[in-house]
Image 1 (cartoon, rainbow, N blue to C red):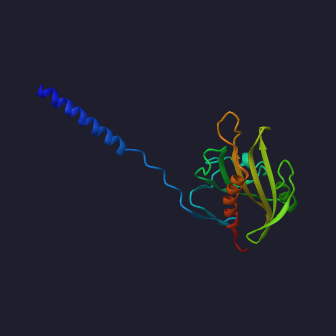
Image 2 (image 1 turned 90 degrees about the horizontal axis):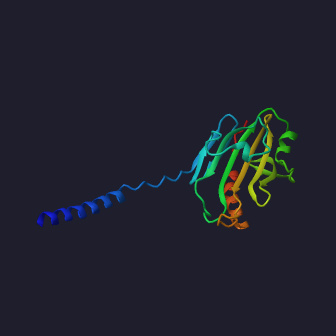
Image 3 (image 1 turned 45 degrees about the vertical axis):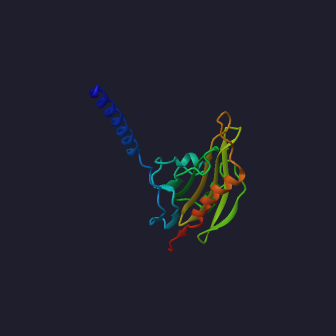
Length: 206
């Protein structure tokens, strides 16, 4: 009898210990990316990547540049991309925000400006970035029912090359998903975060 009681107590105790051990061995939360500075010495471009954003200079690692930047020429090369590392609106259709910097060598000012209009040839305007005048246009695409990709495009010809920034925002159609479409103020908030990076852009003096 006593032997049975001891075994039962041991099993209960072991169960508690194992349960405690499993709680202690929970997977740690991934570290939040720290703010960082980017400087492309070859093309003389610098900007600030905010905390919570992932950063890479390799295409295909966190995004596919030519799918998001539809009007970029085939010879345009990604130099850097920052992507938001969290979802501020998890109950919505928002899936990502991407800030691209790319360069297409050997171009003309007119050809570079045309890229900003996108495939839809949107209206263009001029905007100053880091003391340089850029052509600004807009592109968007989707499945016909909703807009799934929005891209604010900024281009400028400098030193015989087309310098380009893309502020891309991606989402999905809410049909049958249970998620709600993003509101205009939420889209404006995400765009404002990317514009904060754009406002930090600086160019080396040459």
